Amino acid sequence: MALKCGIVGLPNVGKSTLFNCLSNAKAQAANFPFCTIEPNVGVITVPDERMTELSKFVNPERIVPTTVEIVDIAGLVKGASKGEGLGNQFLGNIRECDAILHVLRCFDDDNVVHVDGRVNPVSDKEVIDLELQLKDLDTVEKRLQKVEKLAKTGDKDAKRAHDILSQYRDVLNQGKSARSVKLDKPDDIEFANDLYLLTNKPVMYICNVDEASAQTGNAHVDAVRASISDEGAEILIITAAMEAEIASLETYEDKVAFLSEIGLEEPGVNKLIKKAYHLLNLQTYFTAGVKEVRAWTITVGMKAPQAAAVIHTDFEKGFIRAEVIKYVDFIKFGSEAACRENGKLAVEGKEYVVQDGDIMHFRFNV
Image 1 (cartoon, rainbow, N blue to C red):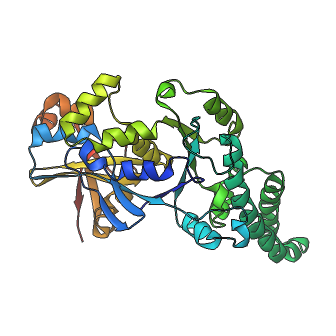
Image 2 (image 1 turned 135 degrees about the vertical axis):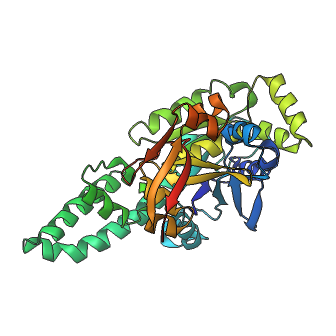
Image 3 (image 1 turned 30 degrees about the vertical axis):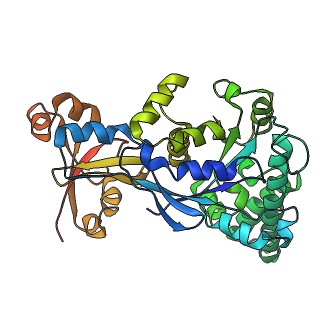
């Protein structure tokens, strides 16, 4: 599954520093790879300690983690929604992303100039939000013009579309993001997804703080948290400068030692990657054998045949059954054979909903 998160933020908020730290995530995950597709696009491995534990028992020839694309999106200025600066390119890049990582400056430092001459993360957030909202409003109003006449004739589908679009228009006109609209019916949600509204994408606000505020945050973070209370968005506190220091260390052992000194179990960028993965409503199942221990990315709620198709479409077409071992059981008993002997290998059919951490083997016939 090719999944992509876009990092956005105004100049001098720590966005590029954070992206550069992510590019060094390979060292923090032992030997997992990072590769550059373009100068501002990287494939980041998702840190998962369970793979290391599984490998201790299986001793595979290789370990293959799951990945997420991270895009450093540049080019935003006021007026981007009307094509100012690199506006069209910026908005197009966001449209291609599945989720947004919005970096906000939440530290005071006279040596780092703010683009507007003062530190106000809520205002910074509003600058980018406004450009995205204006673009969405333009999209919604154009669609409304198309369905308005049909809706007046009593056409049910057109009326439903008109009602949903009107909700979005009203919210956007209030200066709120489209994600503030809560839809319950599956058909309504599907229609909304097909609009590809920029402010309907899941978002995580990354508060870049000074080292003293790394554990508890500060007044700037509190202000951000209050401003997003109705969005259902995630927030992560991180110190980009400290992450850059961790990333600059030569060896994995040096990083572990440094983290221990400052009282952290893992780098903040690892937390960021994991949170971004879950932000996309994703989870992992594993295949484990002597050839490889591999993580496979699926959407939460996916059933066994669809999960099998992530490996190969033929697995779904000819799906017979799935043999499933829970991660905790595999670690407890140490092997597939031992799990089978102790009744911990379950045989599941087409309706089985795959759970995070399941170790799976598929039987199929084509």
